[in-house]
Length: 377
Image (cartoon, rainbow, N blue to C red; front, side, top):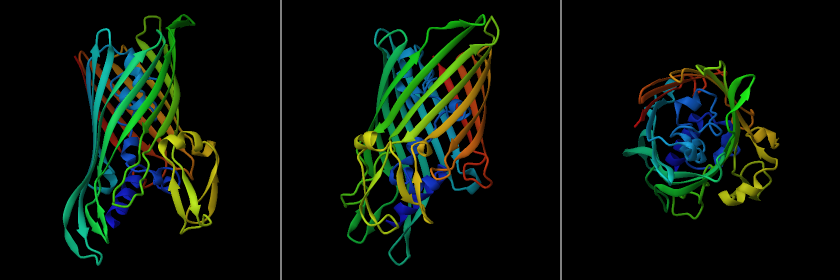
């Protein structure tokens, strides 16, 4: 059990969610499902729910698949926690396929390698080594209700192997679960603004709705990181021929998880029970109190929100520059960083790059680089 706690804490910290480990994220399992997988959106301050125009829409907004008619493969690789040299890496493979008269379907595989761990007994004696990893894979589909509005859904299987062995009478097992996504996207018909072509999009996505994950023989389960995300994007051609194009986007997200105090006074040593992801959709909107290790703090509704804002400039749909900013409340994760990115398109090939510049010194996400490759066919 000690290895499970250590690995879960390491992963939460790797996501830059240390403060949130005692708030919303810390009560969820498999936080690797929240890692933004594509370099394009990551370079735009983690905004993508209202853009969703490539195969990474499976993560951001599967309803975006309904507006796509291309077949595409997209792969992202990132060394995770490069400052720690911890041998962690993240890979994301996604593909879409257009079926005439039916729509576009997509599939993905997400893999997070947590490296090799040391197995110990209750006295700390080394008993061997094992590898830890987490994996998810699934299918998504989007369909149009009108020319401008679509709905989407997705299904994924989740497998988490953090530790093995036995603690006391409790056997440690890999955890598994399934998650469902529900999403919508509205795109205006392109319109004229000051003689230039423009378009406005708005979308939402509720991801990872499903049963919790259980790691031991005990009946206690940890909930999935169900996330509600909503946002908008505005695109404007900067010249009449459309060679220069600018997009501004904004995403607002919230983790739909909540613990209910079963016994105790909220000052430590208490017993909590996690709400199911379905219950949390309705019961996790209000403010709540929690003990942050020093004092009891109250997080209001606005304090629980995470904000991303991004800009993207395209020249002739061949070369892109991107930037963005991401912000969380100090008692709700305290991730605050700038992002930079670039992209190239040539015929059927594409490359995207993103970089995180943290505002806090020695932050575990500092200098994180994502590289994505795209193939259209």
